[in-house]
Image (cartoon, rainbow, N blue to C red; front, side, top):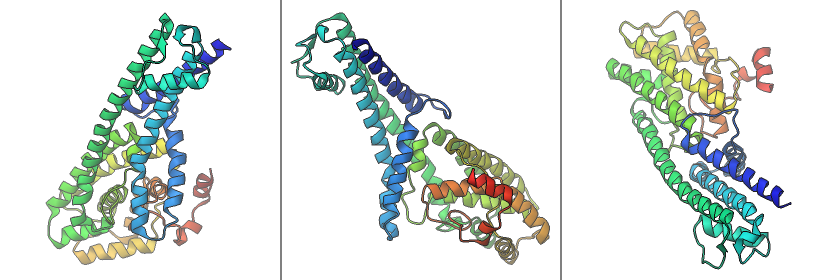
Length: 366
């Protein structure tokens, strides 16, 4: 019985510390590996989102949903700490002969373990055996390491969050709020700033690479919402992707803008693919934009002064390119309960939802 108790304690402790290593120390995604953090965050987010979306007032709903990132981080810290306390308590409870006075029951061992990890020990329980002393030293070191790792994690998370939001805020001037890819092109044409469009594609290409690294290494960043009204990092990214797609498919570019757009599209699509891989989204392979919507956008581009390709050719290329990222991007936006923007977010009311090809419907049901 004592051996089984010690073995269970070692197992719980190993799972907790391995999850800390995967979540904090190892800066890379780890899908398919033993991870406890996603099993904590995802059910907690589903409950949090359900409670938030009950409120009809958008401002209160966004305030509620915006608190989940820090709350999720606290939940992870609580899990790691409590699991460590429980694991060490089981180990200590299996060697009562090495502790003075011997623990009267498991709750005394749990108290001793908690006082050692935090540390809050008052000295009324003392390890006297070699094994007990080793366990106590290890638990004290674990508590110090947890505090240090969590502090470093906070700096990493909020540093990445701040860098992510800088471009989101500055995009307002070009894309509006909520942002739209078509608005980016219209603003650039109105003010005759082709260089600004190329600079935007280059800046967001770097942004996509940075988010690709940070949000897959620390997936909890996905739940940190943008702090300004009518802004969401996913909507802003989608707007830039749509602008790049329109340039590649519809606009006849006479300078290097198409090259900048293509580079942005490749890196941005890589980000979407990896997020879909991590969250296990399946790409339905549809553009999620109606032909009439595209024709209206093309007419607006022509009115803004752009030279555009023939409608059918442009639509075919646009649909092909947007099908590469639209479905996973929209699915993530819906899962995060982000307010819909133009062409991004909940579009289930559109006729295309009933006209998806059979392959897409099967993929969605799978």
